[in-house]
Length: 565
Image (cartoon, rainbow, N blue to C red; front, side, top):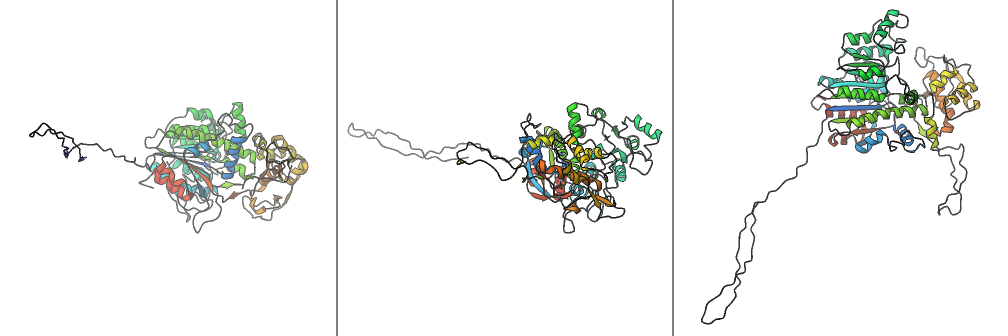
């Protein structure tokens, strides 16, 4: 760059004359100075808008209320298991490091509905399109549509599905199969292994992979034993034919098989099918107990997640992985707050594994959300066990005692929820292993509850659990409504739909007063659910808004597959 400078030069000149006097004359000279100056321009780095990998984590049934339970326990339970972890959940770590948003989740569009089920919600996340209730991998008109997992596989990426329910259950099924109804689990199992779309499958649900006579056919049982499966995995079948899909997966489709934690740990290869239970995997309370005793045989959700990351990350083209904590929803349906807390803790362990893997990377998008909220759960203040007056030292009390008008719930409730040693299903089994509850009594229910719960009830408080009435919603042939009798529910009756399982919801009501817990339904609500995202800001910033699950699906596909989304 050239610059002209006006310089003042002072010069003295001695002017000779006819005498010896001298005179100083000031002369101004213009001097041009030329200088080259290097200019460095600051250029903003190009924004990253695509990623190599997408990890989608779904806490089934995990609304803001459920996250509130987890956070309150982690931060303020006197004996919180997070006391040695800075009282910080892995979900909070993602929230602090990434972006937070909300998402609506009902069946999308003008032709949709108000409330969603898991199959429809997962389908909308998987396809980025509106879907109908209870359908799997289809659009709202019933057309087969390619999912993000299937598109990722077609693009040369590795793919995986992980769940602590059944691999053919609604949420994992929606990413890699296409069925008119979520109940077609035997057909879903066939599609999962035959399609070639899924490299890694880890969950429960072996019952729909087994021949129908597995209970009685010694030869078929020996096949399973030779494959290394424990008897608990192949104890019964839900198929109507004699196909052994596990054997087919190994011999025809190249899958390595795993049936317990040890086998999973040593498994290698490009394709892995791990089925660790006949139906759903161990519940969160059972997992907490076996972890403490160091005698778990099934892998945890965290262990399955770590294995999935280990194997899928070997693909240089990247991967898509869906991880589901599915039993948060099951506990919510049963209105079981203690069980639900343990499921949230189990899910957060898996979230922590993902956080440690991804925290220093810029090539991966993590999305953590729920398919919907279940149970309309919440802590609530009540008129039971009103607080006694006490004196406070503050100078603003003006000599008056402190005495709130209502019971706002003690923090010790959090420890007592964690101390629950069995689910409401365990309590029901204790009353009647065959679930014949017609002649049950309040004493039986109180004994069962008090055996597992740190919150205690009397036989009088438990007696409504035993009551039954004629089923006014009887529908012949309906899976849930064809029983002649139902447990007696006095309010919001149409929203308690699952037959004898409603006895569990009534246990929740019997305990609610002591727990400061309320429930609004035995099904789902339409509450917006939280969305946590982590990854390059150019990708994650778009999730920090109110959106719909259809849009989340579209955003994930655009980030992972910009050319083919």
